[in-house]
Length: 89
Image 1 (cartoon, one colour):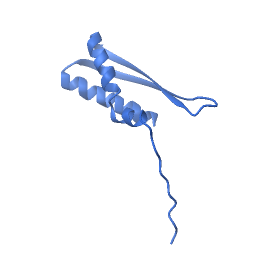
Image 2 (cartoon, one colour; image 1 turned 120 degrees about the horizontal axis):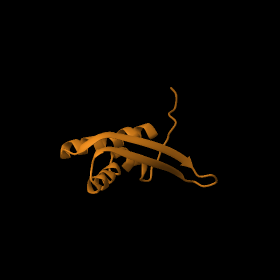
Image 3 (cartoon, one colour; image 1 turned 180 degrees about the vertical axis):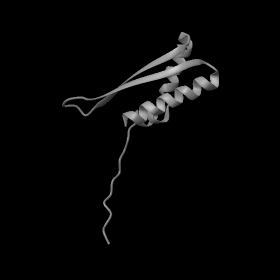
Image 4 (cartoon, one colour; image 1 turned 180 degrees about the horizontal axis):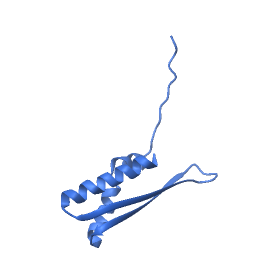
């Protein structure tokens, strides 16, 4: 799951920066998943390092874009899993 989030974030940032013609040379992402003890909560901490000649406004826009990647959107909304057991024939 973390690999999917990292890959999606990186690809989304790369495509956006390329389309804008920004000097984004490299994206490094570190992720940490933490399950709260005794609580029904899981937290994902994502650290993004942008390497290139980017100004503060570009970095802020890329943070917004990172939060709009499809995997991030799925993971940050409520998820419902419906399971059935099919009968054997």
